Image 1 (cartoon, rainbow, N blue to C red):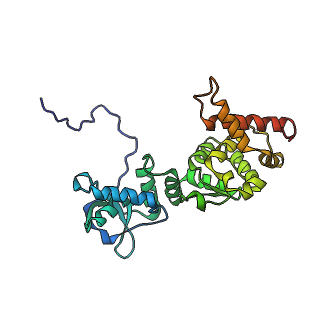
Image 2 (cartoon, rainbow, N blue to C red):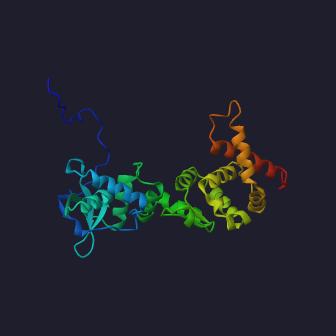
Image 3 (cartoon, rainbow, N blue to C red):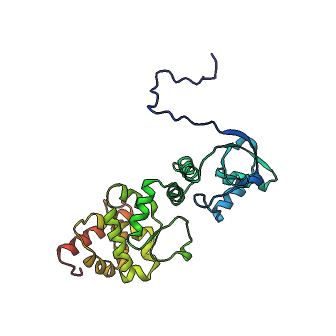
Length: 283
C-alpha cells in the first residue's frame, strides 16, 4: 500500500460562488523591486527585527514559502505577505525571492493582507485592524467611528508604554467584540466619559487595556447610565485600592481560578450599577 494519499474531494459540497480570477504569476522577484505599503503593512519594530534575525540565522530555502506581491508604480511591487522572510533573505545576501504576483488595487492588497494574516497569532490585532481599515472593511470602519465619536483614537500602530498618550485606545480586539455585539453606543459613551474625566484626561494609565476593558464592560452592563453621572463615577474610582481588594479576593476559596480582569469587571459593574441606583452618591 502506498504511503502517499492523493487529493480527493469527491462527496464534498462545492461552494455556491466560485470567483473567476486570473492566476497569479509565479516567479523569482528581485528584492530591489519590492516595497512596503505602510497603509496596511506592519512597521518593523524591535520585536520584528528579532524575528528577522532569527529567520536569517537559520535561513534555508527549504522553509521559505513564496511571498505575495502586487504591481504598483514605476515597475515596483508592493509586498503583501512575506515582509519578515524577505528582509531575512536580503540580510543573508540573496537578491531575489520566490513569489506570486497578483494584480490588486491598494484596497484589495490590504484585504489580502488581512485575510492571510488575520487568523495568525504572529500578527497583532492592531495590524489586522490597520489593514482592514485600509481595505474599507465594515467592521474596522465602524470601530474607528465608534471610538472617534468619543474624541479618541483607535490606534493602528503599537507604541511602548512610555510613548502612549491619553485618549489613545489600543484594545482593538475588545472594541471589535463589543461593537460587533451591538454595543457601539455604550462604547462611545464610556470613552467620552473617560476622556472628559480628570482621571482619563490626565493619566495615561486610564487608557491601558487592564483599566479600559472593565470600565467598558461595566457601562455596557448598565444600559441606563448617562454621561452626566458616569464622569464623576470614573473620577471617584480608587483603582489601586480596588485592584488590591480584588487580588486579596482571589486568595479566597472559590475565587482562585478567576482572573484579576474578570473579578475587576464584576466589581466595577456592581459599583456602577449601585452608583446609578443611588443617583451618583459615592460609595
